[in-house]
Length: 172
Image (cartoon, rainbow, N blue to C red; front, side, top):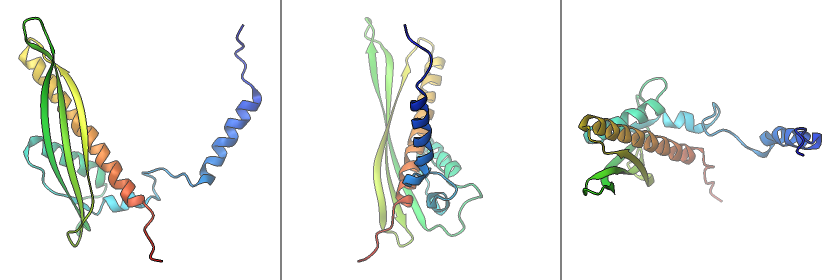
């Protein structure tokens, strides 16, 4: 027989751990006191070719700028996108029933002098069904692109925030 009562000692232990969490130096990544929130407003997101690039740029602008674009940006962000679609789930009549969209994004953050201070690659993989209705397939494919843009935008924002929140290296 299982009792629904929890151990009072376990409850107090959990409460104690939660109370000690701020003492360990934990701070939220996008907190109001985080330097990343301010630094992201100083990043100019350069144009990215194609419709997918426009969507990604708009998503990053929405994430970075709360009070308008920077008048004097201290950083520029360059991004290159490489989307590809692979047909999966082959039916008996050799037609594809599923597709996988992979979007590869290479990004480089440059300081005011033009030197690269951070670069990397992020990838998003989304799937969609290939249906008999071309319209339904097109809507599914567009949704996969939208999900990929959202994932890449979130990942780039997170990586830049981590870069801006790092402890600066002090000369010895």
